[in-house]
Image (cartoon, rainbow, N blue to C red; front, top):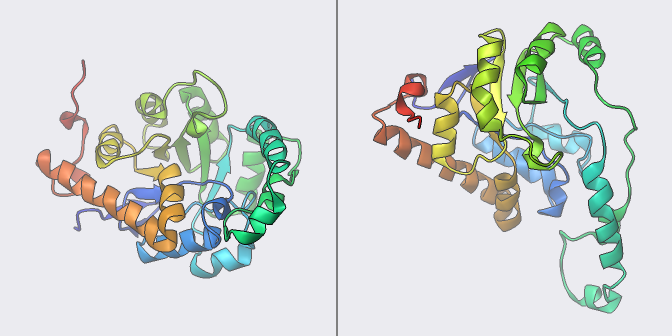
Length: 271
């Protein structure tokens, strides 16, 4: 077995470091989700494509991808972030000198496109929605945004094959617990009936190692991908993924581990 080879829903993948769903990649680079998708393909990495809040045509992004699962965000029943941030963009845009913008090449900065208020409906996801989607598809369904063992139980009850433990980057509700602190309780509640992933706050190989040691099948990264996209387009995203993989190899070696299946809680210290 290769160092990183592992399975998700009967498919074999090369890395337990996945790309999390995130919005509007064109704010980081003009090629947006297309560049991210290409980097994911080159690195054989799973890319969670956010079709609702993408700036790019879906068919263009999916030229290099194929659907393997459906991820449903379960923890965003409002537009709090959009309502707070958009007025700031609107106010700031009034002070931009149009002549200055003509003389500066900033292809990634599209102020008019940024401040347009898009409406995607006022409803929110309920367990009945999960059950309805389950009847429509044979693809695995992953419920994202679960922090509670009770919600994990409900997700499985209504048809989820996977759960992503996440607090939505800490942006939806103040004082929410870190996802990593909720991970073990959710894994214990699921008890092998579904795959469990974790995102939010994964920034280094040691973060990845600790999450896998607690029982996560894989981790998802969001902001670091956007940082790489902003700095170096497709190659920048690949560089971010390569750095995390290399750090994970080093950290595994320090723990005497040579493959993913050897990682367990014995490497962790509790105080």
